[in-house]
Image 1 (cartoon, rainbow, N blue to C red):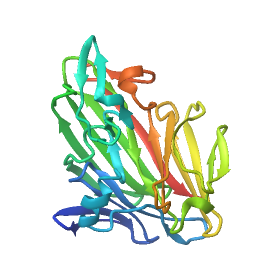
Image 2: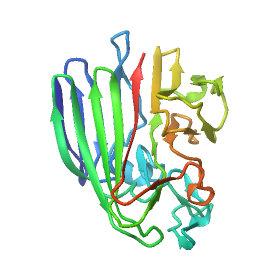
Image 3: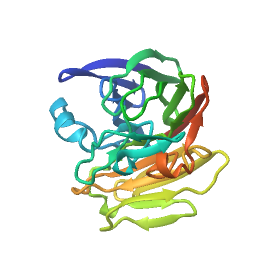
Image 4: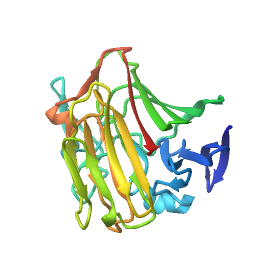
Length: 293
């Protein structure tokens, strides 16, 4: 049986969807950019594993979680725009610089905006919620769009689908991504990472802040994170024709690793490779998900 609960979380609320039969669940924070906050899935061994580095409290969210963009939605650009400057249709724009140490605009414009719950439901097969944000032009990005995020828990694991619609009378340039941090309860040094046709490695003492190009797939690209000690084999799948890149980042405490599905490389509003451009009223859907072997 799937259940939906709205739980207090400091000055805001946390939305949790669970499977009471298996003990699996996820939670999100609608008021903070629809951030994905918690995830627990069951492996083939019938053991449940908590898989994400989460915001443990409201104070933790404000002091650390937002600074790390923990679980954040990255739209209308993932990663960074160099110096916050770009040109589109022969017009120059300046984005707000929110990464002061390097002087860049990073991780989009909605990571701390409020989303509205427009639908939530359970069926015998799944539990899901749809969150929505209506964006009207702001300085540096004078466009209009309707952004929806659907989170779902089902027998195959966790799924996330983003829908964006251009609500203006002119084209919309965009890229999309997410910023989840994964944790198996110990330092990431002992974990193994497998990016098919790209890399298979033990993480060891490596520090990552690198964007990988994924192999072209008609259906899904799959990245695997393996903790042999805890018998955890996490598979992240991404809609192959859309999420073509994976940013990997290890924070200083090395207790987690960010595996970030992205539609484009950093600085997309400048180099424009794989920039998605939506015509007026055009809509785009992009999906990724997680499961345990």
